[in-house]
Image 1 (spheres, rainbow over the protein chains, first blue to last red):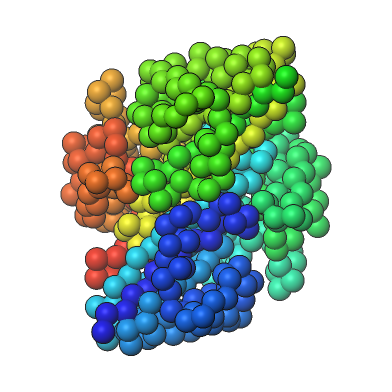
Image 2: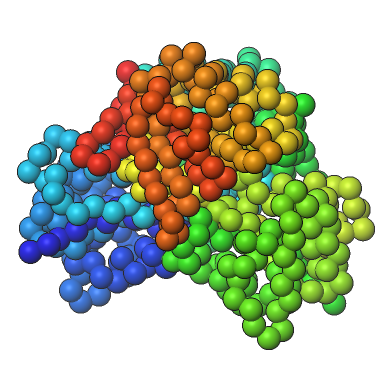
Length: 244
Length: 244
């Protein structure tokens, strides 16, 4: 009995961005686990059991996936975007570390198009020069660490992708992030709000950081802040390849 | 006569990582332009003209693509990985900015799986917490900027993905980057060398930064340096989601 656990990224939303590798894994799966809206993107079929679960159940879901695989099932854990970027892969390895009985489970991680790449593509090429990605959720890290990273990212002149800028349980984080970046001298930088990117509800807004308001971001928004050299040409935003 | 220019990412190498969106664009193209080894990944067919060109010809290639599209051709510009990450999208918008006669050309950018995501997936989840991506090529930026970014990235405790760590024309850059990171106190951090990831020549090495040697990286290597909390479980490397 040789089960397996495949940790797969479904991309940002559009089915045309799911890699053939991930589609093939889903076609062979006996069980699919994940956060409810991501499992909903997997078509039901005979022989496939879907196991949707709530947000913030990551470790429990990871343990369940490892258990099913250890019992011989072919399990796919789905994430939106890429499973390694603020998603389920890290949670699975955390669960694995505490569970020696599952260390022999066969595991694969299948990459996907993470939201910042899709958002950048819609806007032009704002990540065409050095950049960083920061998860604004402070569920799992104290806010002072987030602030410190924002300040250092501004000093390094990175373009900055912000994941999870806002949620009902953290209404103030993104407002404080904007304050920190304005105080760090980034007010004139370009900011891109990419809402529900690659879905029918997609909406892209481009303005300057000093004009941005916290309520422009919600849970389905990926935010990109350009570096100091970022330019606009027509409707496009891009980071020049050259720095001086 | 309505031509178009599609700037598309082919992913890191494996055809199973080319998105259906990109495959569809290639199936409709009349012309494909790009760096020779990337164009070589596009199958020849009747009605398709392949235009391979040398490295460091980015602006000339971008101008040629815009000209062909303006003449009514359906042009695809291919990059490895994602076209917006240290690849052709920024060069196209640079060329566009200097050429008002082409501002009406219909342009799309199609995202892809960039090398750091594929490398991270092979190693586990080293980018599961905040991270940055730095292009070590100093063709287009002075070395002091690269050094400053490395130091600030270490201070921010980002995981760090290094693109283009080494090439024949810049044999010393990566050695100096390792020195800077060792001096910044990162010697005990985990470093991953992902060589030719997702190709038949793939090779993944994991060691500590203080053990790393510059000659472990070449032009086909993507390097990931873990953050200070990065852990190993069996053969896997991951960044815990929680920071303190």
